[in-house]
Image 1: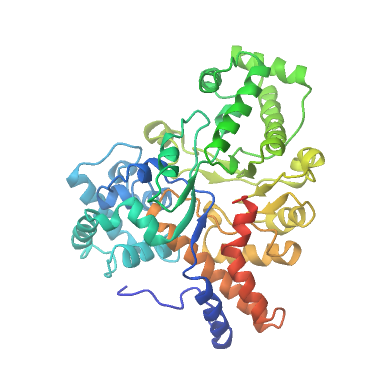
Image 2: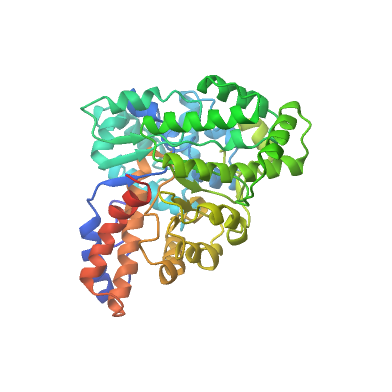
Length: 467
């Protein structure tokens, strides 16, 4: 692993590879537009130095932790769950990671980790038991330098736009700090993520909506007040730079309740008297309400459904959410979204991006929806599908029906800050390869392919997310 092969992920046919090289070269150094991610704004606002290699590259990365856990490594040994390891524990965790390096062969995580180790951290020896301590020391020393502080890396990575994911009651102070700093070129925008405030089946729903009311300075003891508070917080987010709202429920079934019925279920939910059927109906109704609000405030609506969260209850109780045991489920879009799209699918200014971890829906449902509704875009492969083979399948599944310009552009959807350029580089290489194949098959001229390759990393995500 002394270096990364310049043709990685490009086509193997020599003639097609030559075209792909030219297309990739035109996009390789373009700025990164990252319209959906999870890097905390505070890291950049306070320019917080990173700690040790384990707390940066292993503990917060559920892609890494889940594979190590599957190999028998206890999550507690990896610093998962927010409790930091001491210095000895952090080094032991790094050794476990290096010893388990073969388990990453063929995975997307391997591609990103190699890129981070070589391109960002200067580690050129393959992780192993033999190299673990030396690589740990090298990375730890690098993390102590100004060049590897969050702001310096944003400039080095060429990140022009970075979206965070934020709770509706967040005061967004860190975003204001960044927005007011003329020395920091990256545009950091918040994303309105209201999931838990739309789920009245949660035992803490009454406390959540009370906190929502405090943040909005609106009484949320009534349904009308609750709706007003959500509208207020969306306006606040937009005033602080937000361009989208993000929604991740188990499904995307939508329906519209009469105001009186919605108010009745809301009141029952606050008192703990609502049935499961009622709370489910309310959540589905609120997705339509989010779309209505989007037609008024202009926030792009992104849907990330189809994940069974916290599949292993003992792990959730011990380590909390986002610790590697969220598992995809089947999801349906066509019938589920019809009530929402009947009302808003052709509304002026409304835009919605559909993401999925059920790739069977790409060609069957998402591409046809994006191929008709001017409001709908086919989101890039997400989470379990943001891997080379799946990205290729996505392009094949979506393009013939919806084309390139009804897609979202790549999203990295990551907390792993150092891997952002590696993930976007992966997408650029794969798109260059796919376009080169269309050129080789005489379906596109090379000048068209070149224009499309550039648009996929510039114009398309900017338009989709109103940037």
